[in-house]
Length: 145
Image (cartoon, rainbow, N blue to C red; front, side, top):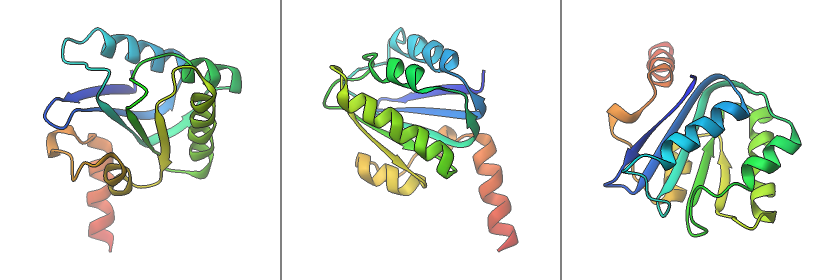
């Protein structure tokens, strides 16, 4: 599965990562798994790090359904970190549907992780919680600079 999560209880944060093409079925399965995790707390915030995602195979009806499914509390913040304008647009569509739902949380989309973490009030993530593919690309970019 190209999506996975880690719960950082110290930061009260769920860190979700994805890679490749992500589907609604994968997102639903991951949410169900997280809700069943004994460390999960619906009052936590979430960072969804999709910088390694190449596409999100979702239509507007599926986005509305996902956005209307309660996972986190209305006080929670969900930061979507995306690599491209197309996926940013999908994130904004999700955010708008979430705002219109009866289970709304605070959702915002970002192009970079530091901005998302700042919005969440988190300074940084532990190295062990960063997706391997993203770390490799960041290291490669630093070497070529």
